[in-house]
Image 1 (cartoon, rainbow, N blue to C red):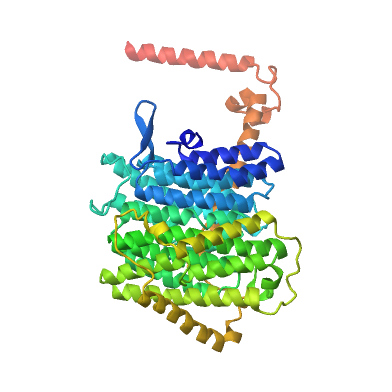
Image 2: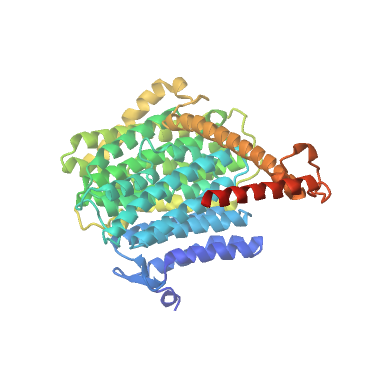
Length: 582
């Protein structure tokens, strides 16, 4: 009966309802709704048949195809619902109604964007994602969150406007539905939409908004943000631009760049944010290769990345929640104090590093193998090199200096970790382990067709274990130098944040000066107008010495001499005219 109730029901709308109901109830009711409500969406998505299409007509002219279910949209919708359930449990202790409605609305908008089948609906939910996630940044009480949120929404406004202009051009060409654009003309619409998606996918050098905004979000908000915006953009890359060779180089650059900067980072969440850039690079490269295996690998890696990246964010945020410390060099000994977070972090670290028996192994190796099979040997080698950076920065650096190193005594516990946060971490850890041990649970949903790939072969397993073993040697050799320290790492955002700051200051000063001048002119004009209203005859008075502040009829009464002068003048003109005519 329950299954029938949710048949053909949009799972994204369920998250909207969960967010609304969570705002109106008591704290206890809100906690129950956030923890249990998202599971209804999970039930709903398993009742969506492939090929289902739903739409409605608006204003008799426009039809919104708000839900189209195929294999690709269903797989992304499934993992978004799973993450919504985990995130709902992890964040249900939060007492902020604004954060509840924005986090659930963010999940719902991401799912709706995935199922949207026409350009206008896709763009609407694309912008709704940005609007709802913005308040997950602004809801944090730290002063830096305001500026980070402003820069975040500016970048997403640029992304949305690029897509908007591209969509307008596509609609003018009669192309109404979202479809792959690679085989069509690479016109202005193609490049505008690609630029908009590239911003959201955090393509280098347009990636810095992630490292800026995600660590500035609330403790629970950053968990949601790590899972949705970039993955919806990956979905768009696969759907719209799959097979664009330009994406191969862009993806490799992202993978290497993010891993390199992560090795140098000291802030836990900034380090993980750089790894979002790095891991999404694998997906972008897979989309660019365009083969069935690479596209399936990119989809699988997006699925797994949502699970292990959110798990890592949950573990680090649990420590931040308990201690208030974000910098790695101020931590140590957390394994003894927070064993649940340590256990789950180990699973997340092994997963993102591609260690066998964890979900990252079954997806990352598929993408790398697809690059090799398609003839991109250098791409496969560089992606493997990026995996070494992941091992160094997360599996060794974070795990040792946060959990295993001696406690420096700089992170006293200010409050205990809530039970629901521990439950959310355990749920994520179980998902990572189950998929890693039973990869067919994931491979059965390959959206681009069947492909023969077996991850657990001796060459694959030995290759990853050898890479992990060879990475630990330099880490142990240079352990004192590997300890993080506080330093400023300039990123590509410097090249537009500094000039934009000067440009913004110049424009602000110009506008301020113009407004000040207009205000002065308005004041002078107003005073003159008031004086004129007080004495209307002043405008026609040729004798300034007779001006008065107030109008007086005696002052402007015509004298007898003036009358005689006027009569004589008129008489003279008439006589002169008659003589001339005669």
